[in-house]
Image (cartoon, rainbow, N blue to C red; front, side, top):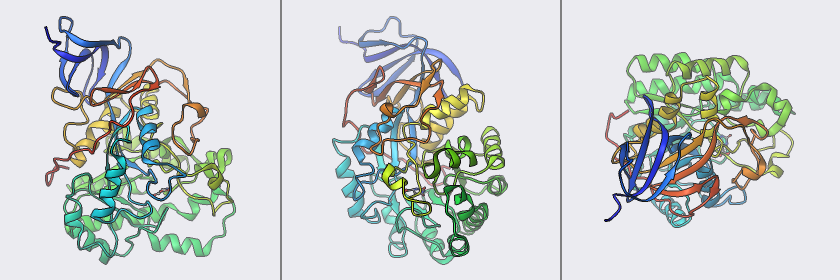
Length: 447
Ligand code: DOR
């Protein structure tokens, strides 16, 4: 008799966005075919996951993988390897590579580079510029892109849309939710001209809370004017939270992201690790962190993303402010968020919602983000009773470091499955190169 399933994960504790329950998961042809008691079902392979937790693979909607042009920091192979090593099964990659991803050709180039090399499913943002602003409605609908990314403030690379007139044009040319790096460029330039910093601890002054507040309020105003859905990335300040809450209460199509580092790192980390804690927007002091965590608990935030932005240790060793901004994070994203949940900071179901379900829903990713019949078998299996230390040998990113090295986590990744195949098995990397472009079924007003 032919096996009913290719694979059964037996006896795991499944975490959904609303509940936690023990169930077997049957997989056929890369898709979840059954969730329930499969004691009497036949399977080509059965893997016992009793005592472990099974969550939907995380969808990291903000990573920088540096290929093409900056492969000494990371490439698509190493970046996606780091992803699956941390339970991420789909990534959305950012356009500030060299060349920039600002056209159909540069998008097609990234998709071709990923073929046969990516460990997980993927898609690549197109960056908005003054020059391509009239073409964005067409570009955002190309297969293999989740849409258009905007930098309102300069960060790594030259992408920038800082004037309201251009931003308005960008927002009017297209309809999909648009992720935005919201720091006010004029304010950043003013601070740069005024201050002469010598240590990374001054980074939060160089890119202050007012820069974030100004950009976020301008963006929400333009969202109200144009109706374009905006997704505000890596919120870092106390001051932005009431703006986001009011926008949501008013029914505007505004969503927002939080990173683990804006909750877990703070001012003291500039003293501990110097420029390794430097990113844009900056990690900030206690009041911001506390308020952001409270806002996560109250459901203000839609998604967790990592803003994985690797730079080499040599580059980071340059004296501040010549040191580049950004830190790796795709591999630590889900372990840190689940650790936070296990320590009572947020709920487990909320963690699943923000790591998997909401990212899929927000961007309209087909068949991902849930453990349910008919969904891709993108699964992460964790030991939630572990005492696991983040160490260099565990890290897969080419940059070879993490600001979280030495941290002990209760969540240890055991298996990662990408469409039913083990990318990580028993904590060891398994099958490479099986990633495919994510598919989108985005419909207007699905936010
Ligand atoms: O710190 C950052 N680094 N923030 C960004 O927005 C870009 C990123 C990078 O690409 O290095």
